[in-house]
Length: 331
Image (cartoon, helix red, strand yellow):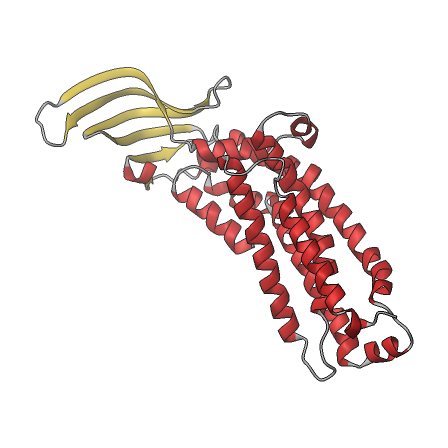
């Protein structure tokens, strides 16, 4: 999961949407979101592993012969599941939004600092999939003042070459847009297939730097407080609230599913059961992700939401327990 988060951040850094200087800080701020994915799986596999040992060492056979029923597993199991579910609920409802908000603030602060943004003197920076190329000869000690700036812009078959003796970053507080101001420079503009070139000199010019609107909206939704989205009428907010609750519910449902899944013969290894558990978790998690996408696209009613995934998994678990009752002990 850390590798996936790292890959996403490196992709954003390569696209010029995130400063390279914040890489490890943003990875740390992603940990609450990563834990929401890892912890339910960890609990699921640990319960399978623990119960599997009872079967492997034939302790479960002795317990069954003494009148042990599978319902008796619920109390010690919930002693484990409920505190973990509470922690996951706190992570999803409070810690993760705070981390997302801190991420947003870190990016805003970094937008004002060229050095933290990752601008290296003497290096060509390719942004907007090659539509914008930025070169700076040197960066002053304040981290935002640039010397001898070169910019190449391509748009709809036209190309502009900007050069300036000085430049610096600034952030529009009203719109949140990032700008690069150039002073004492000139612009050369022309078409790729024509000869209509022109040269314009300027004393100051402001250029908006690239941003990714879809990522900004996602971050804005993630950063909202749970209290705010609880009373919101927006579909996106309703989906986000259900998504924050999902890891806690998944931990409980998967913990129950571990009871029948852990059943094995005395000489059977535990590795196969753990593998089946991982496959079951993959199906569960993918169903949640697909349902989330369907809800955001409007292909599914918000009333159904993500609840059907948890309910279906719970019903399968209860039916499975019922069918295996004669094996794990009905009394």
